[in-house]
Length: 559
Image 1: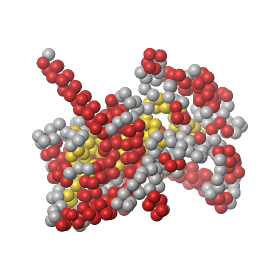
Image 2: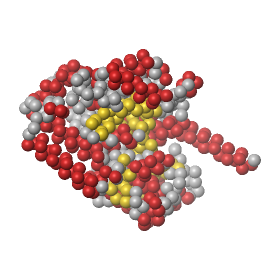
Image 3: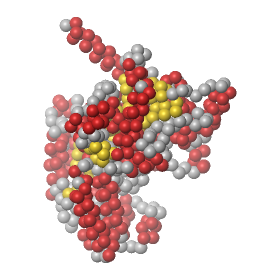
Image 4: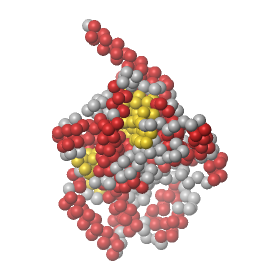
């Protein structure tokens, strides 16, 4: 709040009208957010004045540092809004901070990110398509998540569908592979997204190492053919997730997919690349996607390749492989891992890929470097503890306000500069040095993996406890009471961001649940609704724009 007051006093707040709106600087719940706590466990402007000031740090409370911050903000703001006329039609902006590390020094760098606008067609399209197709990505998980999201009625609905199918002697579709004897996988997909059985062109639910289930279906309402890839749901998928070694695309794959020869050395997540290759070979084998895209019935239909989590990474890589044949395709990646491809591939994929990240989701922050930093920070924190371990656990069960939280680190932790020498601390320092030398030998630092495409970050701004995402360990009583209702968060600030903002793992109460596909889908629907976007309205706007483009092309030809 002090920083915001200083900005207002300097007259810069008027340049960015919504920087102060909804406290976009930090996300506050009932407790101090992790972004506000520095390495010494102190919060924001309550930091110890004796701590040396870093001119780049946003956590110092000295006047000289605030002056440096304001100078930095002035440069950032002046690059976005320069004149009063531009401010009338300017995009909304949000102020955020990202953690940077340099030679064992940590500091927060201020950045300005553009908030999605209701008056911008592309922004509305991003939210509209995200809300629409996130449901399809959720449906790709088939009956398990269908039953989970419908705790009271899910099993009954699928059982009734199975009995009806058996009673009417209806056979399973020929293009549905790997379904169970009850047909629950196909039935759950149809019920989740409300399409007809004939609209499922192909579905392969088989799952093994390097083999991910996928569905090809027709969304007639949006005139779109959707290729949806399932995320992590089995042990085999988990093995694909941890097969993180960077693997080059290779000359043969580039030649086969029509990619430039200089892309052969670009690297991708090994497990995701294997999954993308398998689906690509499958599409070539049965040819159903080619047949649909070239048929008269779907002549004006678009192609969308989508996925969640592991499926999002596979979708991003598969998009590169299919783009030579379908240059107008678009990839929608929901909660993609933070180690899908090299920075060059990720940067070039911005032309056709949108990635969606919900609040403090941990998976988009997972990369080789972030895991190394997280491990080191965790071990260092253990070395800083100066009280018995049971005291640490007791503090988690005590009711504390913000003032008591501020005082807690000083009672339980040594300062970073005053960590006492011990065998544990010495061994850890030696271990870090050995790991650093090993990385230099293996040249790991020169291969940085990141999130693909343009990134949409949904930041939760609600402070109500009832607005938090539903947890996975619900009691029986809570399950019964919440039957037929949802507890999704309805307040979000949706902004464009960059992959660098997800370079560190943040500890948060919702870091796991923000990755859950059900919560991502509901968040996108809630965000779209807050922008006044409905699926019908958004599709009508797109059709109107397509007609205008066609009329424009016709006018050019006639002239």
